Amino acid sequence: MQRIVEHLKQRNVLVSDGAWGTELQKRGLKPGECPELWCLHRRTDVLEIARAYVEAGADLIKTNSFGANRLKLAHFGLADHAADLNESAAAISREAAGDRVHVIASVGPTGRFLLMGDVTEEELYETFREQMMALERGGADGCCIETFSALDEASIAVRAAQENTRLEIIATFTFDASAQGAYRQ
Image (cartoon, rainbow, N blue to C red; front, side, top):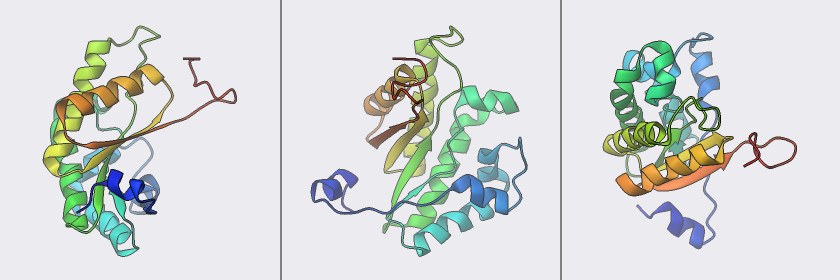
């Protein structure tokens, strides 16, 4: 399969999947429940979502791993399951995608901020390194470091992917009204 960057160089249009959270909620995800845990306990539901996106014609499907980093998972008492959850999330999407569709690992922010002093750069790097490596082992072609508001955290996530995997990298941000990011970086 052609690398994503090659499609973009040729100005090919690539269609991505839709909202995973909405689809999980339709299948019974409760408020406050850990969506990523469904990769282990409700694998069939997650696989059906991924397959539906493939059947709908997506060129790229994501993984159910947005909050599957150890710092975020600690909220659910699942920090020690980060690698398993990420590898499973990627493997499920890879199973649905086969070799026809690119699998893009969904990587969200940790919810902790260097600026606030509640995490160190090293902790962030190790958190993202663990996540990226597990996603690659599970079969992801690339990662989407998505909806970050802190440039420093996103930069660390990108570096962790670059230095430890062969994943293609996409990064997206959320901005406040000033378009400078939530922390004026």
